[in-house]
Length: 132
Image (cartoon, rainbow, N blue to C red; front, side, top):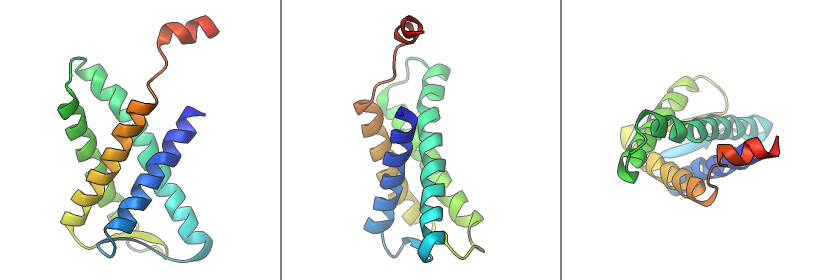
């Protein structure tokens, strides 16, 4: 349930960044193809953002918030660029004009992701063991 909520919220963050930075970042297409494109992008962002923070913290447990934010921001910008490039030839796609909109979109998506992770703290492992 938590994973689904994180995917949805991250998807909303990417969609909001596309709305705020329009026409620099834009979902292009119509009908069900466009809906599936937004869902696919939301799933990719949600999964990466869900698992990126624990990986960053496991590599460097004492990582400060700016380092975590910078790593998440870099991952989100890279994701925007890769998804945009990978969907160029599809009828429904995420379209970026150049590199700068990816920075804006990455900033918005990172902000949403970090706020989400702050609002939904991870379940402690000891609590999970007690429930089992």
